[in-house]
Length: 132
Image (cartoon, rainbow, N blue to C red; front, side, top):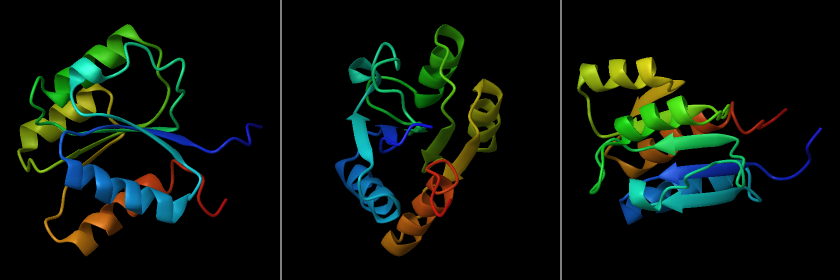
């Protein structure tokens, strides 16, 4: 069994959203390694090196669409890590497309900070082996 801390890859352009996600993940697993790309151009071409335990993807990014990134990632790489699409979009077609492209979950970002932190803790904890 691998005893190294989990790695979470976050594709998120908003600094505030990234900081909130980092805060919530570190509350769950203080030693977690968090790797960020703020757009698809800066995302890893391969996840082999970072071997994430969880991938969190925003939909609306400046240089690309997070769902297109997810589709390409799932088709071109053998990435077994669970993927959570975490977006402000409440559009049902985005959720359907995300799940069809290989996302494990689609979560809408709450506006209130406390609810935002709770949402991240809720979707991240099963994938980061918290309490187990």
